[in-house]
Structure formats: structure tokens, C-alpha cells
Amino acid sequence: MSVRVHFLGTGASIPTKDRNLSSVVLRYNSELVMFDCGEGTQKQMSIAGLSLAKKMKIFISHMHGDHVLGLSGLLQSMALLGREKQLDVYGPRGIMKFVDCVNDAVQFNPTFPLNVHEVRAGRVDDARLYEVHSAWMDHVIPCLGYSFVEKPRPGKFNVKAARRMRIPEGPLWKLLQMGKTVKVKGRKIHPRLIVGPSKPGCKIVYTTDTRPCDETVRLASKADILIHDSSFDTSLEEKANLDGHSTATQAARIAKKAKARRLILTHISARYRTPAVLLREARKIFPNATVASDLMIIDL
Ligand SMILES: [Zn+2]
Ligand SMILES: [Zn+2]
Image 1: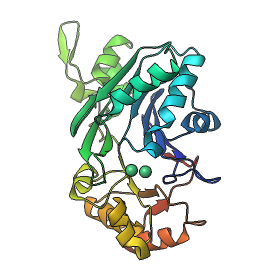
Image 2: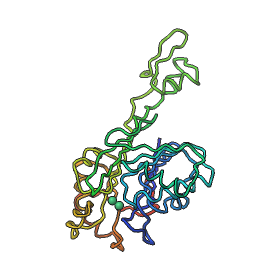
Image 3: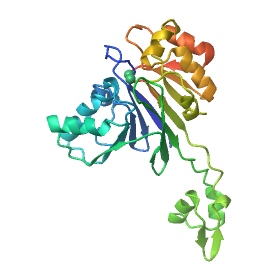
Image 4: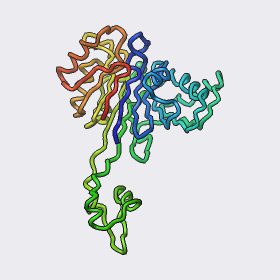
């Protein structure tokens, strides 16, 4: 299954004409998995061609406005459009109160089942094809980083072998592909005879806002993509530390330690008209680094 990563908002604290506030969406198997929902995220979704009616889950990192305030507008738009599918929202303590208060004050009257989950570090979601894990980051308020971990992808189905063994096409092929032993005219057929070895699934990790920390290294171990806080360049390291953020250099060190394949720098301070300095810094330590921009897409 392929994953498409949409960067909807890549700025820090205040939206600018070039950068909206934090939000990343994974498009996976006709489902959307969103990390953070800064203001105006529903508009960015519409520009990116992501439907508000789709099966969807939202994972909020922390209760700072630039990561959560877009949720109220998004929920309102979904209700106005008559969304029917269930929506699950995950986040640290405070997320339930936030959604309740918004609903109390503006009565967006959801037209869909809305489940809000307050979560801690650990496995926060176990779906059929993937899991989502979380870990505590090092910010100025409780903040969770998330990893999307796809379960192993099934191996290649050997059609010729299946025909040779006279296994009728249809449900039995499906069962074999799913790793189940089947019976054909009393003969037991093990999937190993028909299906190749499974391949590891992909891993995408989202960690902002945070100072550099060991929890990120663990969460992002061997990730295909690590999306990391890179609010500032090294000349502002002291400020980054004070505000609970990372510099591009620090993000690159974390990616290297975690043995991630690719690093995407995000949560870029509005002071950088061009992110060239951040990119230069990061690539000195971790060459496969990119600075995220709004509406950027990565396919995995
Ligand atoms: Zn932030
Ligand atoms: Zn924050």
C-alpha cells in the first residue's frame, strides 16, 4: 500500500502568507491520518484535494493554539457538509475539554459520530493495516510525538504456482495472501508455498514541538521519514531551548542518531523568508534533509 504525505501547514506560531500552521496528512488506503490541525487546515485540505468526507483520524500533539485551533473550523466544516463517517480525535489531556467547549459555545452539531480520546505515551491506535505509537516530547507543556507504523506488507503472490497446485482463483487466493492455510480437496496448502516473504511496512514519525530528546530517537528509530521541529537556526539555539524547540542542526543530529532515512524540517519560524540557512545546517550532518513547504507532497 502506498502512502502519500501531504504537508498542509509548516509554519510556527503565526500563519504567514507562505506558511500555514502545523498539519500533516497521510493518505493511506482511502483513509486520512492527520497530525495536528493548525488554523485554516480545512482550507489547506481543500486546496490539496483532500475530502472532508473520508474515513479519518486526527492526532493532536499538544494544546498550543498553532497545533489545535484549526480543529474547531474543521469540525464545523465537516458538519456543514453533512459528513457521515466516524471521526476519531486523539490528543493529550485537555483535548476533550477543548472539543466540548467549542461544541458548547458554537454548537457545530456534528452530523457524524465523533470520538475524542485522551492518550499518553504508548500504542494509541491499532488498525488493521497500521499502528500509531506516541511518546512524550520535551516541550514547555505536555506534547506527544507520533509514529505511524504500517504492519508488514504481504509478499508477492505466485499466480503460476497457485494454478499449478490447482487452487481455484477467488476467496482461497485471498486467504493465502493474508497468510492463512487453505484446504483444496482435502489437501492442506501453506501460504509459504504460494506467497513470498512479507516486506516491512513504512514508518513515518511526526515530532513537533520539541527540544532534541532521546524519546524522539527511540520513536523515530529507522523511520522512512522523520518530520521534526526545526524552528530556528543554530545562532538562536538558546532561544530554541528556552521556548522548547529545536534548531535545524539539532533535528539533523536526532535523525542521524535514529538512523532515519529522510528528515523533513518543519515548524519554521516566520523570521526566515527563505529556509536556505536551515537546510544548509541540517545537510552538513544529515544529507537527506528537506525543509517542508506548504502543500508539499512525498510519496512512499
Ligand atoms: Zn507550535
Ligand atoms: Zn508548542
